[in-house]
Picture 1 (cartoon, one colour):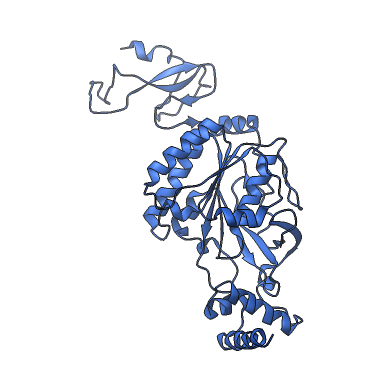
Picture 2: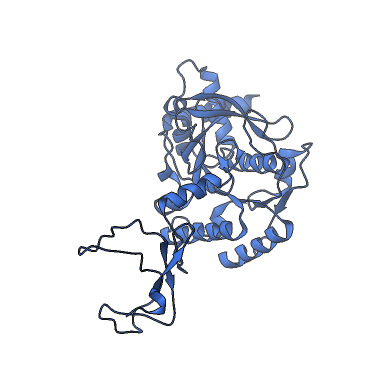
Length: 373
């Protein structure tokens, strides 16, 4: 018996095996209905949900489903061609619409690089050898939970910032949950019409050493990105203590975090030169992956506000060893500099690739020099 719901399917013919033989015109899609559901025997039942009926359509074949967005592969390809290509906001490292993580060990300069990225996006340009596809500046919300006003002034005195760059700080000692933090961030981003969020440092949102907390944090950021249609860059720490190449596994909670983020890049120290660093891409979803190896070599420069400038490219493994032609005095200066920064002998050993006994010997020598001066 032909029911109302099956009208229009008379052009659909099948062989005994159930394979259609005609060209299936008009085309059909499944349409959910709340008034009819049948078992194979033809009896109605309320136990099978959701319910669907065939519906004729002259347009692209789609399934009307409240949970999934279903398209044919051909339709998906056609839709993607019509989409605007995401812009590179800061070279290939930060791409429009993505959740990206920048991570590095302590005292390498990750906050300096993060603010430089935020500054470049707010001004709609990228100087010092970095590429940008932006045509105008965007409002950026920069959550700075790392630096004091004195540190900020010491780094950027004399630098001219755009009014598009908004710095958010939190009072010391305030207690909050991640949900409260994100709710206030959401309100601010909507009110200020921000297109980009930079969060320094993600450890303030949860314990990334815990896989569950790390996963919850990144999922919350992805949800915020999707709801507000923004780009997110988060700064993270790594406990990496050896002179081996950076990997995504050096990111805290990486087993979960690495799968959920869109992109990641790391900042490392170049051995043999206190001013040089390297930037390595570790994951890229839609951006070009140009700096995995060779990596980008940059130099930290203070002129015009603390920032990094492009210098060259190089093989990461070669940058992790102190060159044989480096002057011995330069090694002494590096050890003394890191010691003055509060690094332990063991950490200096790891950073510079020299023995702990040699580190101790150099520190004692430099102390003697300083006392005699």
